[in-house]
Every structure is written in C-alpha cells, then in structure tokens.
Length: 99
Image (cartoon, rainbow, N blue to C red; front, side):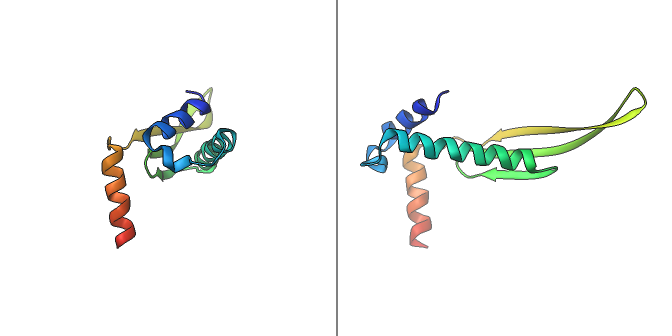
C-alpha cells in the first residue's frame, strides 16, 4: 500500500479531519509516523511496542547455534488490533475527551 492510498483512505473516512492540509503534507506526516514506528521496532531488543489504532509488535531475541557459534536473531511478531469501525473509534475518542 502506498502512502497516497493511506491519505485517500483517511480522507474517505473523515474528510473534515484533513480539511485545509495539502495531500503532500499529510503524506509526509504519515510517512514519518511509519518511519518512527519502524525505528522503535528496530531499536528495541525485546519487549512489546503498542501502536494505538494499529496493533502490537512483540519483539524477542532468539539465540541459536550455527557452526559452533552462538548467533542472535530478532523475531518480530505483529498482532493487529481488533477491528473497530470509525464510528466506534470516534465514540471512544469522545469518551476519552470527556473524562
């Protein structure tokens, strides 16, 4: 999926959300958000990184032996968040703002 497709998806769900912001700027913001998530995953040796609205990255360090040498690998498992309709997400956001 290309960044421009993500921009169009967001605009399709809530056109007012991006009103007045040029598509190129929105694409740049989304791209940078993805880069930051990727950097967090890359720089985390072990643990869980939760990305609200997206899911969780579970990161584990694996140790194995290759040709008599201990080799460490990183395993990243992504678990998608439960599907939420945009109406439900907006209701949840409104509840958080009221609290």
